[in-house]
Image 1 (tube, rainbow, N blue to C red):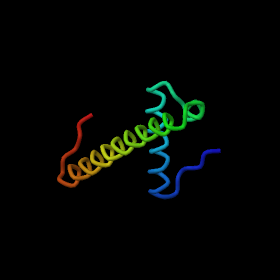
Image 2: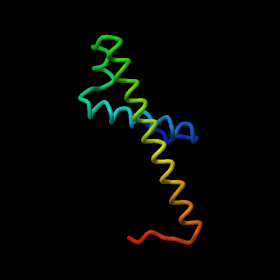
Image 3: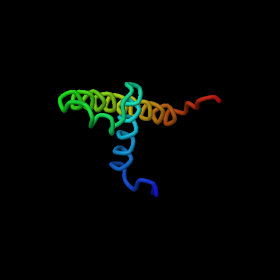
Length: 79
């Protein structure tokens, strides 16, 4: 069963896995289907997926930092 992650590293790892899966899905792959591809092609796609995940994670962290900065400055987002 799925236990909530205990540390920031675990949260990062879970998010990275989700982002990689999202990238693969958008390209029409799963981690399992990659195993049927030639090794160099599968490696290239996973490298692209990892780059995508890193960029998205950096974007998420940047937004979180920005939101914390705004909250600290007294700004509140209107709903």
